[in-house]
Image (tube, rainbow, N blue to C red; front, side, top):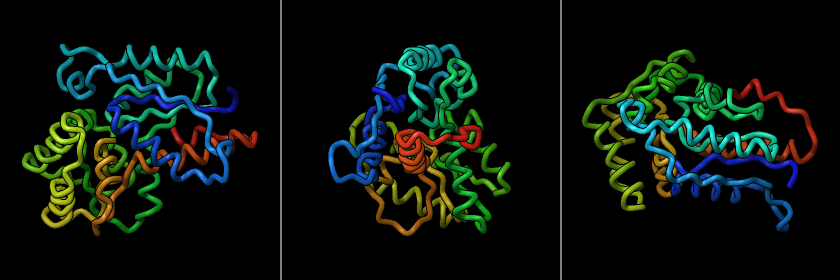
Length: 245
């Protein structure tokens, strides 16, 4: 297979399935051959990202992802996407392991937010404790000129419960809990836009989209970018990947 891209997934599996489902649904097709060419690496046994970021005595997830990247690089994909926000803690190290461009999901999400909501003042971030700890989204949001709200300990516990108790463990989305999180970030903390900084939250958005709150869904955005880039690759067009690092 030529002119394809690689999806570095499995962190977690249901979130990766959500990305692939959105990717295929949004691809304009009239026949089988119109779908995109890609390889999905569902590496479910990659150590927990948050565990390591918070406690470096826990297993490091970097070697597993670097191994995947190096294996896939031998196949020469046009680009890669990594469907885990928290794993971007090691983005520079992962990108350094290959000459193949890897799309930076958090950077892409906040760049899109800046264009889509230029008049927003306060931006809320909901994500894993690992993503909070590594400050990746926090830095991108503040560097873009927005005021940032992380909520409080109570809302973070609710977010963690939705991600781990409901989606990762039970394999289901608690719509009521998801809506309550969005409502609290909007009403209590005054957030104009809420960034979904975890792909499990993107799954929640896919399964429970019927609300009135403005959200930035990083997984949805990178799915659209994947379609755009893969289409250009198929057409043989040149791509400036430096704009999406």
